[in-house]
Image 1 (cartoon, one colour):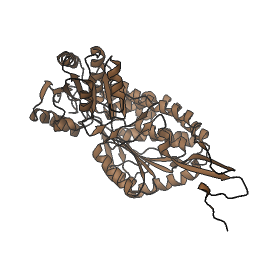
Image 2 (cartoon, rainbow, N blue to C red; image 1 turned 60 degrees about the vertical axis):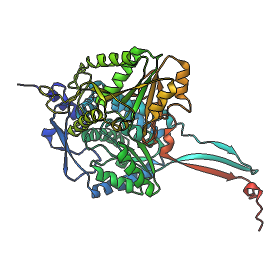
Image 3 (spheres, rainbow, N blue to C red; image 1 turned 30 degrees about the horizontal axis):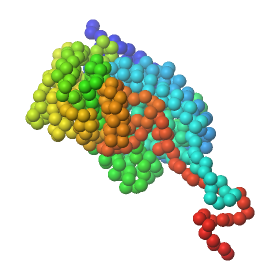
Image 4 (tube, rainbow, N blue to C red; image 1 turned 135 degrees about the horizontal axis):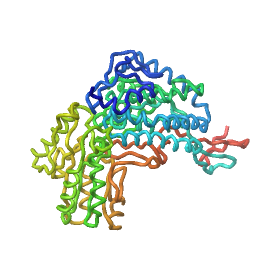
Length: 518
C-alpha cells in the first residue's frame, strides 16, 4: 500500500494537535471563527491533495465578529499593558509547544520548505518575546511648558479594532507581527487570512482562543473571518476599524488604501517588492552566490523580499554569471517536507501560469534565458505546481523586469562605471522593499546606505535581500506601501498619540502670552 506524503510526515497527527479537522473529519470551523457560509476547500500544492475545508464568513458573520471585537475592546483596553504582555507571553509558550505541528501545516498548506515552516513559527515566538518586553515600554515624552505652573506630556492609547488582511506566503508570521504588537497596545484584532491558506488561520485562532479562555478574557480579542476579497471590502469600509493592516500585491494595496483613506482611517501596507542585489568588483563571490541563490529560490521565489534582480559590474559579470548558473544545477526540487530538497512548489496553478508568462515575456522583450525554466511533471510532481527556478539576462527597462513575478525567476543585469550607476538601476523600479550590496569596499557600502543610496525600506550590506530580524522595523517605500511592522517603534502605528497639558495653579495663563481678561 502506497504511503501518502501527508501520512509519511504525520499531517493527521499535526492537524489533530492544532484542533484542525482533516478531510475525513468534516468542516473545520475553529474557535471564535465567525463562519456559516459556503465551503472553502484547501488543497496542498505539495501533492494536490485536499487537506480539509472551512466555512467562509458571510456579511452577517462579519457583523457578529465586529460586535464581539468592539465589546471585547471595552474590557481589554483597561487591562494594564504589562498584564496584556503576560497574555502574549502565554501565547508564545503555546506556540513553542505547537511549533512542530504548526510548522508542518504551514509547509504542507503553503508549500514552503519544512525548515522555513518551522522558521515562520519561530518568528511568531520571537515577536511574542519582543512584545512582552515592549509592554513595559509604551512610553511618551515630557516637555517643558512655556506657561508657569504647567506640565506637558504625551501618551499613547489603544486604537480599538485592528483589521488584518494577510497573504498566503507567510500565512501565520505576518498575522503575529500585527497581533502581538496590537494586543500589548490594548487593541483587539479581526483577521482575514488568505483564502489559499485558511487552515493555518484556523490553527492560530485555536491556539490564541485557548489562551484567552484560560485567562477568562473575551473571545472577541481575537476574531477570525475566512473568505475572499468580499470580506476584505467589508473591513476596509468599516469605520469601526481605525487601522487596516494589509499584506499582498500592490494592486490589492491600492484598493485598500483608497477605501480606508476615503473614510480617513489608517492603513499599514506591506506590498510588492522588486528586490535587487548589487554586486561590485570588490564583492566576495562565494557570499554573493549564497545570498543570491537563497534569495531567488527560497520559498520558490514567493517572498515579498525575494531577490528578483542581480545587478553585476561588467568586470566580474561573466564570473558571477557562471557561478550562479553552476549553483542552480545543484538545486533539488520536490516535496518541501523532505529537508533534502531546496525548492518546493508554487502556491497554485495560477502562480504557475504567471511564471510561464514571465519567461515568455522576457524572451519577447529581447532577454536571453540562461537557466531554462519549465513545469515539472511525473512522480512527485502530481500537483502541477512545481517549476524549475530560471535565470534570464535582461535590461532593467524591460516591462517584465519592472513588475514583480511571484515565482523563482532571476534577472541578471549588467552595469559599468561607479556604484552610483548600479544604485540608479536598483532604484529604477516602482517598488522599494528590500535591497542589498555585495562589496568589501567601505566607500561603496556607505554610498549605498546614504541619503543618495538605496531608496528601499531595507538596505543590507553583504547579506541578501530576504530574511528579516524581529528587532528591526519591516517594510518598504514607494509602491511597497510605506508601512512598518515588527520591531523598532512599529508599535506606534497601533496606538493613538495624545498630548496633555496640566495646569496646577489657580490662574489660567494663555499660550504665547495672549490676554483674554473677563
